[in-house]
Length: 251
Image 1 (cartoon, rainbow, N blue to C red):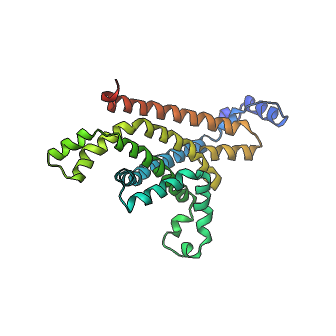
Image 2: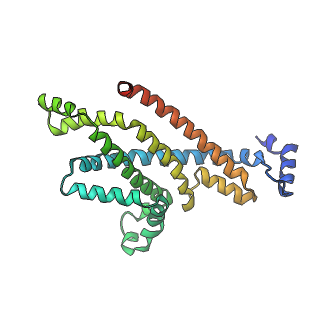
Image 3: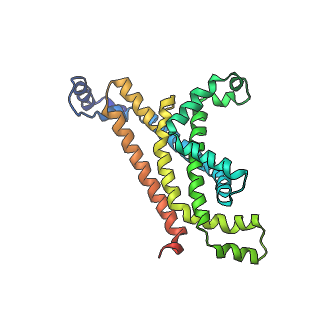
């Protein structure tokens, strides 16, 4: 790696870049920061996967509250979904990261060691946002569950909780797989907002390289390529899951 960076090519590339050569891409700047890129990819995947997983745990009861239309839980679930789907994710990140610190009782609470960290604020914002979208996806999937499946479970003597656990949730998850895959891709791309609160994710590393070396294309183009690679891998993996678990739904 050092030999590559010290080569005549890298020297010539740096001189051409300083001379203002248009559309000149210096790969040595990208290769020299490979460790930062690796950490940026890890951080992006970490935030995306955790936000999706924790969001699912929140979305499942919200989806049942929306579908069952209970008098107390349903209005709360509708309000939650409306707030986090109706406002931009960037605003939510700013409100949690910058807004909560304005309250004295928050700074004096036991949660302050977490809320003062950018990583936790980003994870909370991404989780709540993803939960709202996943709740709507699951609500639609639960509503599309055939009534006959529920009636068969009742005829077998299953309780409502057992029916939900063994019949409704597995059936709804199969139907929701394509939409959940789209939500994963949206969250992967939305995680780029972590860079605006000092986190060194993929875009954060790209912006750091641009600022450190006074370049434009090296950081942003590399970040774009990495996002495209992760998107392709995600679409491929989710496609395999869909073909495996929704085969009986394809006609």
